[in-house]
Length: 401
Image 1 (cartoon, helix red, strand yellow):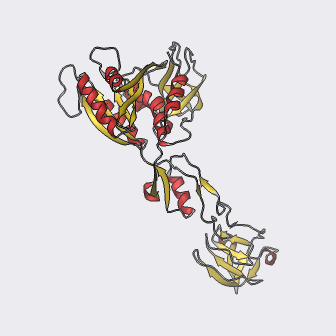
Image 2 (image 1 turned 45 degrees about the horizontal axis):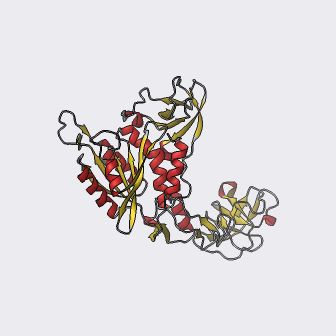
Image 3 (image 1 turned 180 degrees about the vertical axis):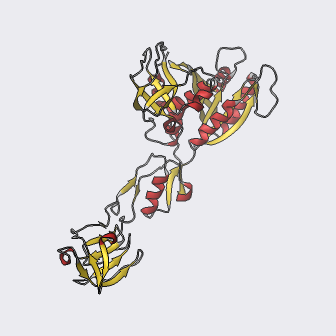
């Protein structure tokens, strides 16, 4: 049986990132993976500018509070004033370029109107309330490194640096289908012995949340020819095929045999709970192959396995450099006296006291545990936890994007 770390290492070693690059306008680039490093076309800010609404002055003209200076000009944002004459002040607004000759801006709350000018009730130091040209970004500086998923703040940074579009990798194409004659779609009558197919909608949402282009082939009958046909159709135009269920030892589970016939398959028993079985392989197609991953059929097992195993693989296919979710060390506000010999991924949430609570039912079919929680406690094999111990907590926010 593979440890969690061993299985993940094998998965990531096999992943071959897509190489095709598309140029996307900033309005369509969020969530995509940047393919090439980006440099700023300008200095940000481009000129020394005011950090306050107030008055631009020469600090040498204000050696004591109460000095009254005539106001020689008014400089709103978006305009450029003239050189400041000695012994005068310029009315200036936030973001406006500081006029030549001025070396400080006094905020308006420290000034008042006086006879023939403005009274400066503060002795400024040189450079006060002035944002220097290039203090945020120097012209030509690298602002975005390749291999990142572009966030809204990255888009804002690119825009501030004058970049109208960004080179990104094309979307990873994923084909999904689901096996099980007992599966019924939500909204349909539920006959005896049947269950609603929640994994179809969960896995689609997970993949779309990662920015994949998803092709859904629906539910496939538990027949070997039908499963092989679905694999061939999915492999034709996708980078990855994901199935749910059908990888156990039951005689009606045909996915293993179908993948072995259409390509090759490794059945991995991974020392994790929930989610012990994972099928990984490839399906042949003309001129290439599609990767194959089969996740367990139990809903919680399927989602947890996706979050901790499939997600890093998909991100690596997309060209993401860092696929490791951040974990936080928090206080356990629970007891876990009977740990499993496998690594456990326990559904949990942070409480108002800054500790972590567990959902009382950690069964692999209890989807409500995922909705109640806001992350997973990763518990090493055979480690009992006592209230007050430190545990590793990974928020769902780190596992769903």
